[in-house]
Length: 540
Image (cartoon, rainbow, N blue to C red; front, side, top):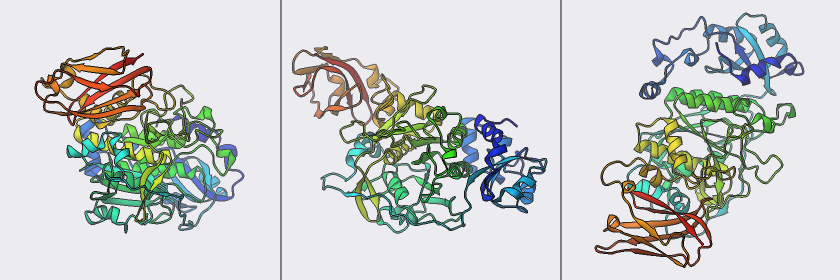
């Protein structure tokens, strides 16, 4: 059975990694999946029909890797330790026990080795956490979270009827306190849109406790109050998983993430949002270095990559290390076939805390950015502002889910590619903003075909380069009887001009005033709910 680099790394160091720990939480690796009660010929015994259908639709085979761990091996291991969870993809088990007993297990032919992950912990031995401080929102005339949604074309997306219906989103976080009682999430409860929930830290089903971080993250996607707040994908179905232990930081949390990803896969999840990340731990011997941010080392990174191969779209926060000594992304943001998300403010400027790329092997990170500074979120029954890439990530996850809903023939990797190719910084991606801010309208515009396609039409912007304070567009007959929105961005994605114009019949040209626009290179985007056109513009 093939082994990944990270697993080989761990097994290589087992000789000294476990010696100092008499008791604790460990991962035990098995050599094979023999004596298994499950069969590849009957995948419905370990995968839901939705999971099987997703694989069939995208041509993803069900292999031995997807089989559950041998029940015979698990039963044997349970005689010397408590098996907490098993991993199909890693062919392993998470156990609570002591190294003396596990050393005896090394004599068994089916045990390859084990690794220490964390100190021993009681099953429900968790502390409550009130979360971070929030700032009450300012009163505004539109729905409260209009700005963060509008930035990504969500307003137009919702008008077109894409709000996440029939999409399944998994959220991995530290707790979802009061989601089951808050009126902003009542539609999720009453319409049974939380289809499953699991606490992988406390090993129980109740996730509506411990911490409000996950509540706020979830709200950007799923909260709804008519005329007041609309999450990006408020009609999607959700799987809520606690993988992060707010009371400590150990490698076991990476394995919690792995087990949760396998759980999500088995349920047929389309999109995973992960607003967690790791580089430093309470046990310094577990710390990662920048050299480890290569997409091939950290356990959680390898797990995210594996989830992608199963057809799920993984979206994760890039990290909040931009102002400190680490500076770079946290794992799993260094994975290759995922979307890592940075943060910008309401003016589309990079938030100072947002982590930088590139990965150690030179890949662009973050891939995309969204509003993560003064993001409006829900805690209990209050709308307030929150800061962090934890809150920009779910915005993009919700956008990706709804865009995928509108284009169901696409694969997870194709959705990622389109969002990157049509983002505001796609022509000059960098290590602070990546490919820029994704936008539903622009992404959908790249999919439009037919004789009425804006992209097949021609019009002129002049003068270009712009030498005065005005620029003109002609002819404008392709815009007649439409309300067209014009937005002018620089190449870093900062918005300089936004104007809505309704084009009248027989109108020869449109005029835009650039008085407040300085010299530089820009992209002028013209679009309505279904069509899009963009032109490079140079202002002298």
